[in-house]
Image 1 (tube, rainbow, N blue to C red):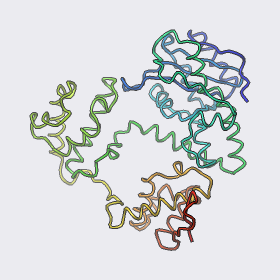
Image 2: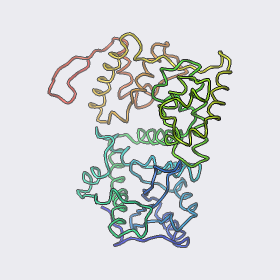
Image 3: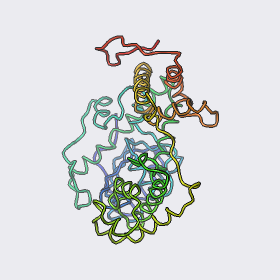
Image 4: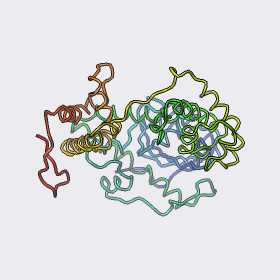
Amino acid sequence: MPNQSAGYQIINTQRGLEELVAHLYESGTFAFDTEFIPEETYEPELCLIQIATHTRLAVIDPRVIPNLSLFWSAVVDPALRVVVHAASEDLRICNLQTGKLPPRIFDIQLAAGLLGPSYPASLSSLVLRYTGQSVLTGETRTDWRKRPLSPNQIEYALDDVRHLLFIAETLDAKLVEMGRQDWFVEASENLIKEIAKRDDPSRWKRLSGIHTLNRRSLEIARQLYGWRLERAIAMNRPVRQFMRDDLLVGIAKRQPRSRGDLESLRDFNRPNLLKAGGEIMDIIQESLKVPEAELPTLPDRVEDLSGGSMLLGILTATLAYACFHGKVAQGLVATVGDIKELVRWHLEGRPETEIPALMESWKAEVCGKLMLDVIEGRKALRVTDLSAEVPVTIE
């Protein structure tokens, strides 16, 4: 159980920050979390940082310490292990601040998902499961920008880190016991890669509705996506607040040839969009000039194949069966996109240069090989017990 000294420190001076960071290095491992406001700016507005070591609890006030580079340097230092819970947004802030992500991350939500079916598990459920205690819940609507913060607000914030080190040690021991340390290392690396790709311009291919566009419209969507990201960063505005995904896809599909045609689109009446109408039309005109041979394409969708949707259903059931018997959370093993990638790989002749994620490392052993056996007809599903959590068997 946690053995932090009674009370907590409020770090609101540069000297106090220096002393705390020195303590983190002495400890070798620490837990952290943040409170931030994400709705109004591209870079989330950081309001509080909570820290826990085995002997201390502390909160850093970024509102009065403008230079936090010393702390962020500690977060990304491979000499320190950083314990978190579902920290993709917190780590995105770290990436925005430093251009780096921590190499020694231990996400207790991730570890718990590799040890059982619960993923994503909330912090409160993990704290209750592994410590028997409850976390405070009364300050969920706090505006963390306002000062002073009450003692109750600070205690609520500290509950986000208070038990993390103890839970991490418990889960770490279970990973060793079940021989899943390598699974965790790989899953952690994948988590870091996904966070790093959050603002990758190539993510335009994931826009909802993108598969309804022809190749010329795809080029418009690609260029608009990159322009939107640049503008959001320059203006420090949330990307989708500047231009929603569905509007971006709608513009690309319509391929407006005039300013009036563009402005007649529904939801294009926002002042910032009207002001940028000329730039948007320039992007459309440039996209229309791209040679046909250079236009982007998207791979065929598995669900568009004859019987594709049924095949995805069968493979999803196979995945559920494999994860249930493998005692690992289905959401951590594969997404629908991973299943589609496996099917496309099979249809393309199983090229050795494009091995899908489900046919690599531990995922292949848990479910990938089994799913391929089902695809190729070597194994089949049979309903065995409708009252069971997984009512099928594979034979």
